[in-house]
Image (cartoon, rainbow, N blue to C red):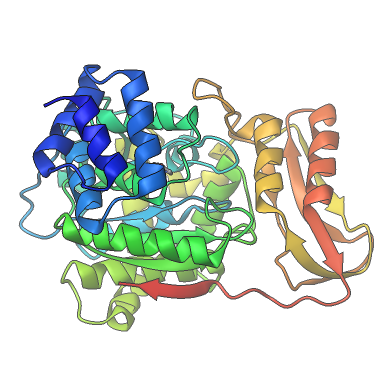
Length: 433
Ligand code: URA
């Protein structure tokens, strides 16, 4: 086999076989495939597209380019993947809720890059917590608690790391086929039986339009299913932050509030919906409505909170985080309200601009090696449709210095539209699968 023939097959629409895809993905991981060949492959896929079969073959090949975990827990293991957004701390709520009803969740997560945050950074906003555990510790935490949220081992889907870096500099990031294989190769390397996908759509999302979000959702669901993992997707709104906060420790505050005093909110509703869907996919329940009742009980009984406490402690954080969580979370030096420039209703919040406001405060990364300040960000964000009087707060900013606070305030105000009339935006847009 050789790379040029495989690339030509994609170019000509004849499609490489599973064996050829395996060879190419292994070559990406080992370095046998050159940067030029990887770039040409990515562009051929981008322009020509892959069939469903081809997408499954590429996903499996990329998954198998490194370690693939398997579990013998005696029951299906499940997970959730979100295409990323602002104020999205669902994972921190969903994993302990599922573990509390005995549904195992071995969650391998990522760090934030660009305007969206990462689950690992949020969890590590809790002092002492370290998600960079090896496979043995990951397995021990799963045995002990039933859920784990950890970083990926260097050898999980290594072909994706290489191909993603090349896509980034060859204009091939937007290919739905490549996005699908990239997301799923990493998720499926965790040895999942069922995966629920949260495909975001709106100004703070990777896919800004509903049409693109639907295309990606369909591609992800059919490919995961074709690769042997039961799957469905919810398409959900990201025209504003999911929780009314954006920033690592500030989102942990939202999670702790939901775990200690659960009320209906977009964060709680979406976490319940996704967890209930994946319970049905995993065969634990026959209807999401039934699963959702059990899951809500884990919030009101404190069972999910106990799992979260156990997870934090297992990752090196405080032993009983829930007892004094407010005191333990880092606080920014400058905390103040952002005043509405006029009277009206919140009509739009540019999620990308708000996310970049957090990044520029030091709460996110522009390059993979940047260190982040977990204390900074925005909280108390008024939702779209809310009435506000001139001078009343639209959000609260948390910054490291007065200079950073001024820039963060300007960024927020430029992201905000207040109009005479605006309605709340529905959270759930569609279900695929
Ligand atoms: N997230 C990924 O992991 N890969 C992509 O290609 C896009 C988003």
